[in-house]
Image (cartoon, rainbow, N blue to C red):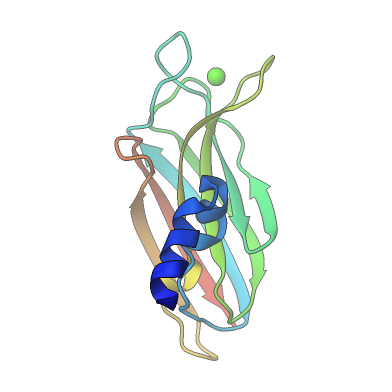
Length: 153
Ligand SMILES: [Ca+2]
């Protein structure tokens, strides 16, 4: 009874709320610093007249955020930028929103990858950990993003 009520409630919630918190699993990690290396992406959507985009990534780790520089006219951008965030053992939302930069108008969403950081980066208390992977960008068909995560206690 409770479970079905919960599901109905969940399905009525706005999409943005689901993206922000609904996907977060309960996996926990450890307190420390995580470096997010935003390496590259491939197969992005082209939204400019030229058929390409000027992609950049807006990152959010927990409540902190940052962004990469934009790469002009590319669907396979190489950013190679590193960002450091303080993290706690509680579930940490990792959000990578890929966007097309525009000088005179607002940026356009090209897709995103959202996950609990601790589902990707497996850590043991007191030990460092590292992973480098390609992740699919949602919605399907929006390309993939390559990141390396390095945890230091
Ligand atoms: Ca553009």
